[in-house]
Image (tube, rainbow, N blue to C red; front, side, top):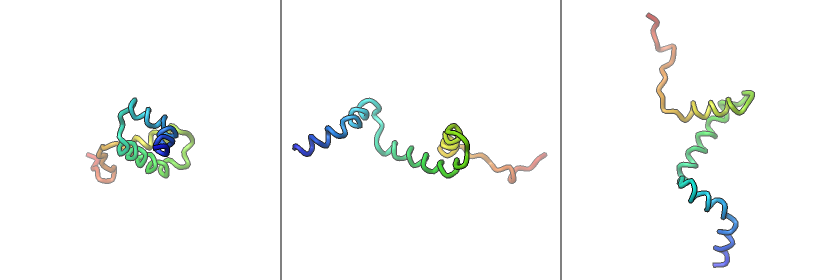
Length: 73
């Protein structure tokens, strides 16, 4: 019980944060995976705004057709 109390004391902030946000760990891990996937794509860019834009582009569910497959009429 002493070890459990020490562990809870060490992770007190994270435990209390869960009660505030109610976000499950799986959701947070999936968001982290999307950010990690966007980092190589945003490498060489000049600021954090470009990384944030790349995360949005990686995380979206839109299907954007390529220009090469379109025909100009």
